[in-house]
Length: 257
Image 1 (cartoon, one colour):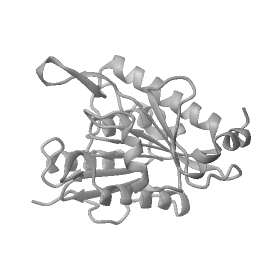
Image 2 (spheres, rainbow, N blue to C red):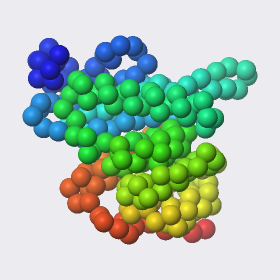
Image 3 (cartoon, helix red, strand yellow):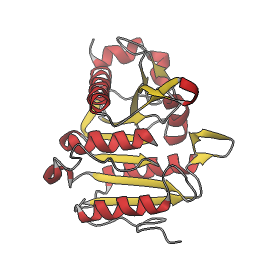
């Protein structure tokens, strides 16, 4: 079905910025912007949820990020071990999980591109915690597919040659965020990752340090201030791309003690 016909058939959903049912299964969530314009090529935000959450986190973050600016899609994570012998959804860095994550991410992108008018040069891959680490992994492995990568409290991946596409990956814009008192991603680890990205010659690196990446009322939800900065940063990359250097911001160097 052509995109224009699809938009007409989903009249209420598109006009109301709803999550649209996926075409083939229920393991992904797809967000349509408010007052969708089929002749405009939208940026696509691909969201990788954190541990203990699932693809429905997209429903909670997009009203805070923006109701109008993006088409957005989120795949469900893979089964990972949790406490007490239970399993939850997340993203591990095993070879099998990385391969499966790549497949899920690119299937999500294909679904979004078939159903909406998405600009192929405006794809942004973002994630929180282990989702941020996986976002780094996939974007660095396929840099030609993405305009930027955003990791909110997720460390840079180790092993499996994350700089295997180093020449092409240097053009990726990077947004890295950390919580000041985080146990999962402490300041010294964020500082190490920032130095690594600098030494690799990444063209655009934005680092933000917050008191906390999560809402105090619900530890699994990303703080509104962080999501607002995500929106502003992506729009900045689209409207005023920077050729080189580290962009200014709340913090653009290693956090001090």
